[in-house]
Image (cartoon, rainbow, N blue to C red; front, side):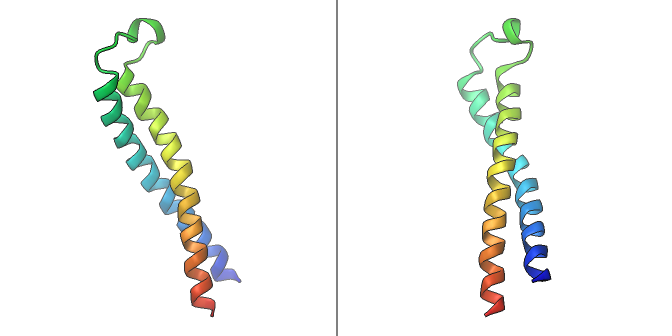
Length: 81
């Protein structure tokens, strides 16, 4: 039982870190591509690619953390059998 909790924590942490990097990268690419031509700096105080990088990092961190926990649960249930 202790190993199962450890796997969940480890999977969630690794997923969180990978999600920050992957989500930030995708946000940067999509924001630079799609929002690069708009002048939204005057209205919100930051560039479009910068905003999408932050939003992508948050969404990626949450999604990949949940995905990492799910994978860890599957792997721990296979090892217990």
